[in-house]
Length: 275
View 1 (cartoon, rainbow, N blue to C red):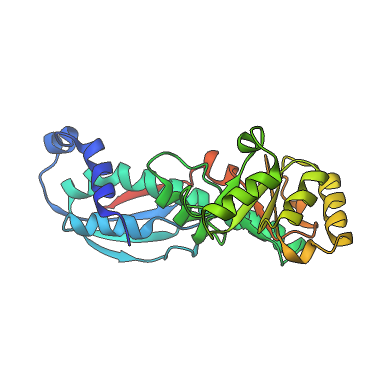
View 2 (view 1 turned 45 degrees about the horizontal axis):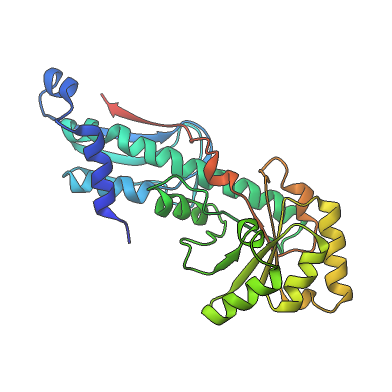
């Protein structure tokens, strides 16, 4: 379900006391307009744009759905209605659509690069999302074919380096097990900690900021100990769509990439009034 109150707050942030330029220059006539892709992209955010325009009384027709590919110059949303309403929503919609489509496109690119090497591995995002935009960032990841990972800190346990500095890995895992039956994921930075986490019963082991060579050694050690099949293996730490192929050939299950949402390149979209 779309968080409509949040969408309206985005509009209020921009419109405030009104679009004074449009109010001064234009009579409130009915016009036709459209949003188009100015480059190839995986579309995400069109559902949110459609809701905002419809809520303002503008007729909409979706031409390219979320999760589908749009090509440069292709129309993705047709509009007909009040010129005041359309222009007052223009920047809010383009900002959200551009960001979400940028995330979806990067997620799709990374997923493609990984699947060419190893179709068993899934790409995932992280919680490194813009404050207030997590729902939209995560939705965009899914549109691009990536896993969203945790939405909140309460979804599952994730024992990080900040926790491990204050207690050993095995003690941390045991305490999590005593607290709740939710899955326990543990970040590790060494072969030894990976083995200890697996032996203590972690559900997921995240190799954090480890080289492909060291990860390969850790996986071999887990296999030798008969523990590889007991855990889900994840790689994370500074991986980008440009470097993900270096990790794709490893025997892991998930590659999580904060760059998909913390270093967003917005897709190029525009709104054009049809004259």
